[in-house]
Image (cartoon, rainbow, N blue to C red):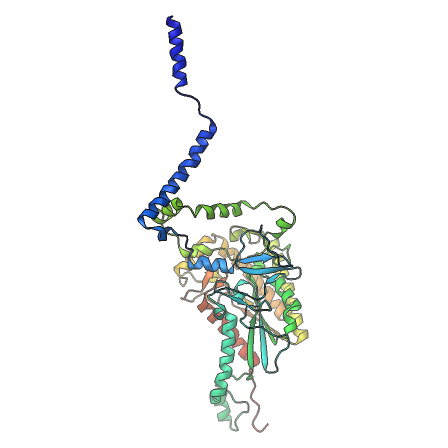
Length: 460
């Protein structure tokens, strides 16, 4: 009797603590965060703080999205499974890698019916009084992250050239005459004046495409730009070639190879970006970021340049050459492409200006604003050293190529902003609107020298 009672008590005690199934605990793991999120949203709504927690991307984030490329097939169909699709639409091209979709615009840029960054269409036939200058290159030449078309260096260069023509017509006495005066003393005085250029209509067409390297520029020149009979071509590039693997002749749509071969799995980095974006929408996360964590510097929003090369690497250091042989192969590719463009300019009797584009790490630490210092710190300890070594080789290669023809000229602008106290970079390869004016001035001075009218002797 006693033993049965004891056994009954033991069995009764066990029934009071039943073993719960796994899905009970799983429900707790899911339910508690959901409940907290709902309570957080209710509290925000009751206290009237909806505006503070609303998803409002910063001005810089909006620009990044506006300038991020979104890719389509040659027939115009989008690639919905490609990651990081943006607002600037580009069409895949077997010859040029990709080119911009014609006739599109948003508040930051306008693409004309020919696919160039210009507010007006351009006809194939050139007017008799028109001087055409085409700009080729990647993100910096295109004017990535600039406020509008007018802020690009191409547009500002066009304004400067046409402004000089207007000044020559209104105040001809301020410029060198077409015919020199009689006396040597007067000749010496008039030659101190600014040079005069032909009084024509100057048109600078921005045919650059974000992400393009020298191979893409060569294809653009031969396949599209040459048909418009340019008088001069400006090539502003180099950075993209330094980061593009030597196995590619030019940049292509990032992630397209994996999509075409059926390997549609995103990389860990891309999955991480998707998860981070989703978590960023939660009010719990926003509350922690807003009230518990220090605010991030706006400079960290765009450390890696947009639309860069074939791959989708998370850091710039992963784009850089891994050894000396790979670096030399990339530089050789750049040299060969330049040589072909130089030969075209010689045979077509067109002027070619090759610009080595400015780059963030060339800035003097004493002159660099805090926002740019923050950008540089995020690029890694070895970034500046490795970029400098690559640039030295690129400059030497460009000199070799341009020296083969009198029609070509090299502008080494790598350290253009080295000692400037003013902000210049929005990313390692994107200039501010104000810095574009400085860049335009560099090309303007060279063009003036090349187009200058030599005064004729007295009596001729």
